[in-house]
Length: 321
Ligand code: GZL
Image (cartoon, rainbow, N blue to C red; front, side, top):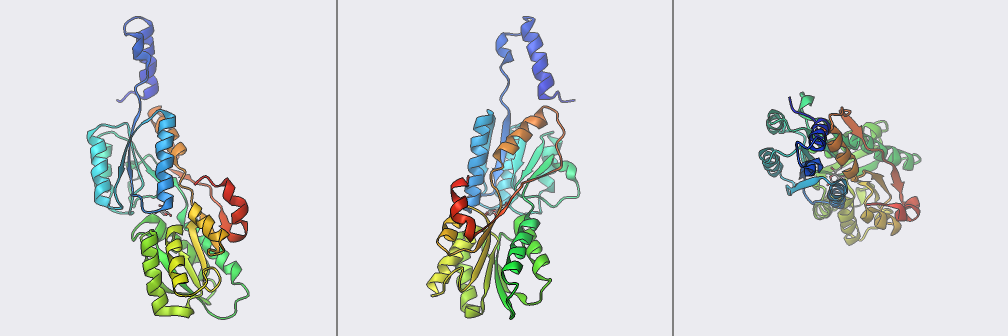
């Protein structure tokens, strides 16, 4: 039976105060958190990493951090190294939804609790993780769809949409697409005429948008990008094609990072659905609660809004990422 941190500290204090142990034993052993990050593919990810590192420091938690460069095998390697180091808690943002059960079973066998942050995993056995904290990506897709339906409510003809998907197999890409299509399917004028992954990066977003423009040209009425970075890359492609972003082509994206606000203030992006990367404080609290033997909810959902270009300038000073 593993003693939880609170019981252990009480026992240590009693032993120290009775003279059985030096008073220095009262100093609490620092909690060790092993975090396996996806990579550094977007402004969102950079802000997420910053939130985790600064929150660990503030919480006095010893953070072991790895960047997987968006490769699942690197994340699995990092998790295995944290198991070998016998960290107190493991946390990670799974780059894709599938392929995690084996390594999560190894963590469970080693009695190391796991917290999923940002993205979730496909598993029937939810005992393999303590909690999943992060956004509701399907709702983010619905918000994007509802904004478009409202914007185009008086549009009579077809509305041709091109879609820049996030990383293939990732929870945000799968769920944002699902939520967006759930809303627009109510009106047959909305047609997704091209859809391809831009892997959440600016470079790939620009490259794929160039291909869309070459293939469909002026037929394109709307771009739906699963994140701001791909939208920002696509804006460059749209301008290089001699078109006006946010005017000739309506642009909807997700995250709400600084680059998106700058694009909206410049009149080049119509709306960004918020997806907060600031999960650090919640994660550190979860780590402490787990070690104190507290029970956590299986799902902790981030509360988020939506920012059309009309409010961007006013809201920008309040942004924290
Ligand atoms: C969403 C997060 C996604 C962001 C992208 O929570 O997983 O990954 O939307 C990031 O910007 O690359």
